[in-house]
Amino acid sequence: MIFFATVVALILGVMLVIAIINALVFPRLQLPTPNETNAFNQQAGVSVLIPARNEGTIIGGTVQALLAQHYPNFEIIMLDDHSTDNTRLMAETAARGDSRLRVLAGAPLPVGWLGKNWACHQLAAAARHDILIFTDADVTWGPQALSALIQMLHHTQADLLTVWPTQITLTWGERLVVPLMALAILGYLPVPLVHNGPWPSAAAGSGQCMVFRRAAYLQCGGHQAVRNQIVEDTQLAQRIKASGLRLRLADGAALLHCRMYEGWPAVLLGYAKNILAGHGNSILLLLLSTLFHVTIFVLPWLWLVIGFVGLGRTGWPLWPLLLCLLGVSLRGLTAICTRQRPLDALFLPISVLLMTRIALQAIWWQLRDGGPRWKDRKLLQ
Image 1: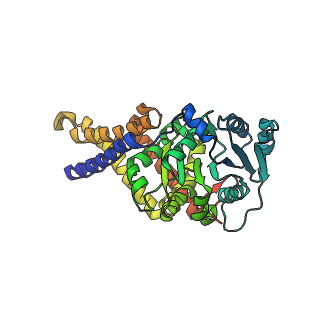
Image 2: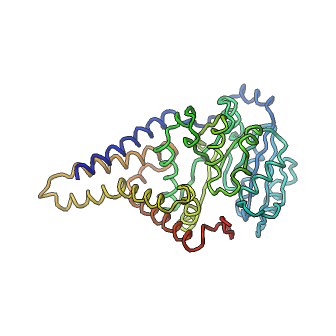
Image 3: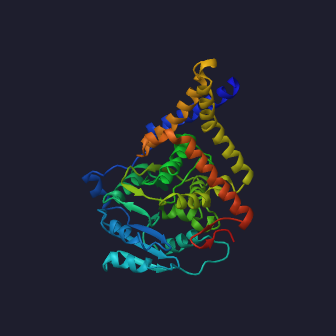
């Protein structure tokens, strides 16, 4: 057991060090100063591009928030991807005739394309400006968010700036699972390596907000190059680096926020849609990853419980206490960095078990149907 504890402690220690480094250096959006805002008046215009399918309940608020941006020179293009609800009507009603919004009707989905990637490809072709911002319909924009994005794009000279909005988590299913996205980014991927290393594999992307310079978007192949990829955001980030272009990551710092999924059923289906693709569509790799996380985040808690049951014979269970403390510290730190609830870190074993359930759902879909479904579509044809 001492060997097991030593190995797990080393793993968690390395992850905690990476998270501490990222906590210190991970870029965060900042409100622009008046002088900087005036300077942006001379910048190229911005095209905000929104693929939308059956988003009638939320798209109106998204459009209103975007039209209220302080940035002076932008257009919004929403593509209605064959919605069966009132998505288009709600978007146009929210705009109240504002000419900055255009709504496109999506063309039929070609063979070999995923729906979102095809929608984004059409949006890019329709955009008038040289800065392309792909954002999801459920992302909410603070009034100065667009200015903050362009400020960071200008300061970093990025060819692709990808931003993780602050996640809104209300139900327990959301609270216990959604923040693990931040743990994966901050605990596994040192941002200095992403920004300065030459390896395309050291990259990540957030499809909730991706800011491209048009020339870079075309040079890396755009969505056409990732037309059949479920995790197209990370694939695009990798292609940017492979093309010798400049990738930068940032945290939305509450200027951008998003409620990805509402309740556990939506969390289960949403994460199961992506998790296998995030493991290279390898069931074996996903099973090994799941076993790894159960080993380092769940087994120490079982050891701790067993240790307390036998406390009178063995003394204080110091090793499992240390391992549990390391895991909770890692989860808590990443929660603080991304404006989540740090006390939810105490439920880390439950979070990992829920992710295990998600992994099993993804494997079941793959074995039974050949892949996941999303919004009434089978993603992999």
